[in-house]
Amino acid sequence: GVESAKNQANALFSKGSLDEAVRWFSKGLWLVETKKVKDAPSDLHSILHSNRAFAYIKLKKLAEAEEDCSKALGVNSKNTKATYRRAMARFELGKFEGAKQDVEEVLKDLPD
Image (tube, rainbow, N blue to C red; front, side, top):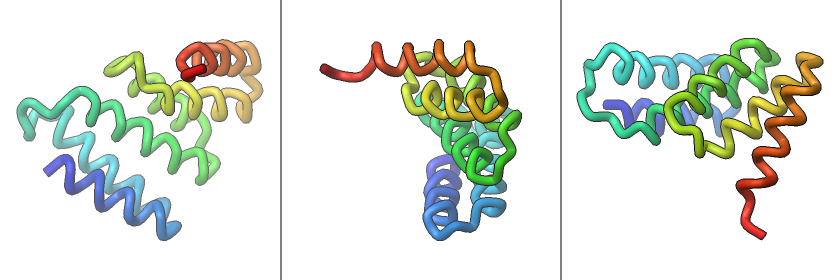
């Protein structure tokens, strides 16, 4: 299921198998987005996009990372990791104003 795809992807990511991790995150997203798995929590859907984005950042696929983070935030606007990762991707893409806005949003969300 979706949770096992996420766990498999996270394990591969931890070992540095980034391309394979992206494939597993994508499988999980496919299950959710094609409704093969009914009632997948929106948090999980958002996390899959956010985690795949982090793998894309490591692979220097920055446009894909930015897009995945935006999708993650579309599903769950409170996903602080997605906002932070999008800031990283935007900074590396030279989108400094967008990166700055994301960082300011992250700082607002952090506990004091």
